Image 1 (cartoon, rainbow, N blue to C red):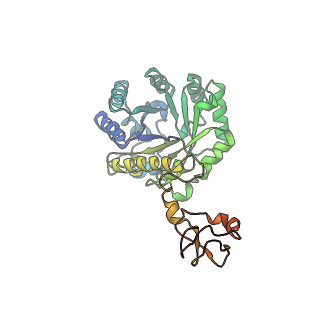
Image 2: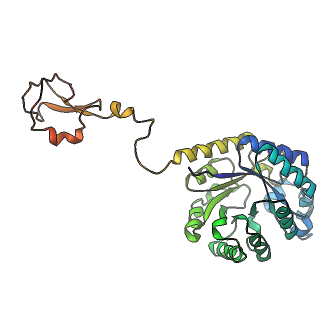
Image 3: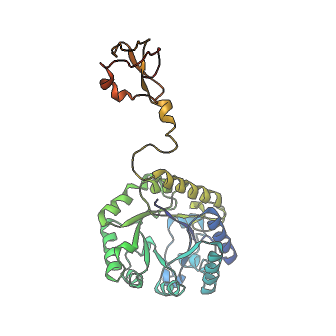
Length: 332
């Protein structure tokens, strides 16, 4: 049975607090996610001093501060990474983090991460892509804001650097927080898979849990979803994130979808086998019939239960002789 790899995206919703980050690891593990993911960066390496915030960030943070000032408060240092890595091991959940610069890539490689997540904003960053590709690790590539040509270019860089395509999962994504339903374009996930012959998944920024569940139903092998301990906290991503009970509900729903997808082989299921006798029909006597009498459409009919001769044998039965006496409604 296919298993969807579910990433609980803590991102920067720890607000720069290691204690809060550890609680998020615990919440992600309790919800049943496969991995909890943070973000690794140095603000001054990520954005220029006067870089503007995204429109959604202006609404959810102090509008007077720059993007660099906002991100500086959300950095986590090497020691914090080590503590979160250990906390994740203790809780039985995989620790992941998205690097945003070369120094961060090297840190995560040093920490032994087996999966490298590339965010949508870095899909056109050739030196960055080449660096990650050269590690030959598993790669998850988000594609928000990208078209097929840009995805192809990014895959070319990653594969030419040394990472084979079968180690790359490409996530369809939309980078608006929250994403309007009319902009989700979930079918594009399958388009990506058809175009490149790669594993696909979905990174979700909509409100609620319907869309990631739908993504799992149409073939996503990875689902990523932001979560927070409290949606009312200040910070850029809290308002478009799930709270822990919602994250648990999403995980449970995706696991149910995995079961429901089944094998694809159409045959009676074990649970419905007993219903065949109840719901299907058999050939029965429509009136009393004497032994030796010819069985015809005048003395036969079809009724429940279904544990007699199947009506699919109707033409073989018509014209034969009754081997014994039958009462009305007796199975032939």
